[in-house]
Length: 368
Ligand SMILES: NC(=O)c1ccc[n+]([C@@H]2O[C@H](COP(=O)([O-])OP(=O)(O)OC[C@H]3O[C@@H](n4cnc5c(N)ncnc54)[C@H](O)[C@@H]3O)[C@@H](O)[C@H]2O)c1
Image (cartoon, rainbow, N blue to C red):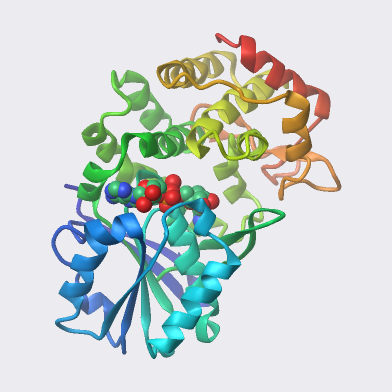
């Protein structure tokens, strides 16, 4: 079991987020970290509540006035309406500005609870206790909080840092196997964008989906994300590298009407964006082949197929938040572990619609 602490510090705002590793949900949470909380609200979903939320509430009730607020699991709950209902419930329960929110769940709960914490009484303290692989390596870190709207995913949101993130790797043992690929995609991405040696360890792994092996990659992936977020909290430049594979990936996800999971879409997205980077002469040829080999292994083991017409995928990419004056932008790799800053250091390289479409057409034929 990994232990230890990492910190993300924003000195200009006097804000700090500590990341802890330990058996917090299976055993106990260090109460001292919640100091001076007048009351605690655990926000969780119905699945995670049964597994961990109720036990945590009972445990914390010995020292604090503690409430458990449960919402239905799944992306469909991540709406402004749910946020408003949670806020109303917190009000009824008497939470005040010294109360603390604990987000116990996957990325849906983390995004939702963080969003509520950022607006309730103009902002109260909150902590993340991520329970999916994706939430542990990605969504709980960085302070991006959002809800989905009728006009798109994550369209209303805030940047609001949790005071702490408690990562308990043992909870991954209960995670359904279909959820694992979402975290694996982010682990592989992190190796490609920032740590060649981690990519090489992934490359050598015979079974990339074995949970105990994956646990070893969590602290390394967390450290990569923490470092990038600390360097550029509001995504002015280098934080954009975290979007590798996500421009095409999000467009595939939206155009499939969310039938294809996020992780599978990011795997396809990295195959396309890597292909574009090589075509533009940015990505080293032999490193491109190595990334494609790993991604193709995952693609064939999960039988991931491209669902829809490339032109429809392109129309969704045209709505991407990173676009500038209607032109699609991407962050692309130069080598394994190194991303290209582009001509102006913005890590957002303009991509023509033709090459975008070509990459999708090649995806169907791509065997490296
Ligand atoms: N804020 C960010 O920076 C960021 C980054 C990436 C993704 N996200 C968001 O994350 C969300 C997806 O998160 P997710 O993939 O964790 O999905 P999720 O939160 O929907 O969780 C997936 C499923 O796993 C169940 N579950 C969670 N932990 C479990 C456990 N330990 N054991 C058994 N079941 C468990 C949940 O009940 C749910 O049914 C999306 O809304 C996405 O937009 C945010």
